Amino acid sequence: MKIALTISGNDLKAPLDNRFGRAAKFLIYDLESDTFVTIDNQQNLNAAQGAGIQSAETVVRSGAKALVTAHCGPKAFRVLQSAGVKIYTTSAASVAEALADYRAGKLSESQSEDVAGHWV
Image (tube, rainbow, N blue to C red):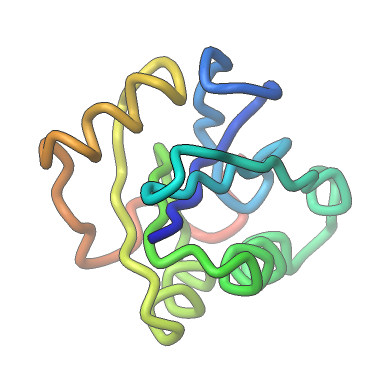
């Protein structure tokens, strides 16, 4: 299974990006092969609108079945939820820490968005 994490760097040691829709990149981690790829999200960093929806569509297209991030807004949450992607929020400092918490079952699945739309 693949999971997506919001990232502001290029590897597992990088800080977790606190924002979903305007995250710098997504790290798509394959739990079965212990490999990952990064997907650039630069087009949404300064988008006037639609960043959450477009980012959610990117995650869905990646094949991820779960998202680990610090915050997720209402429109992105609806897109992800309707595509069957489970959303987990965390306050982990790094991608490695967030991934370890996910694997250990320490993260709870989000039942709703946790920030308003257009949150920066």
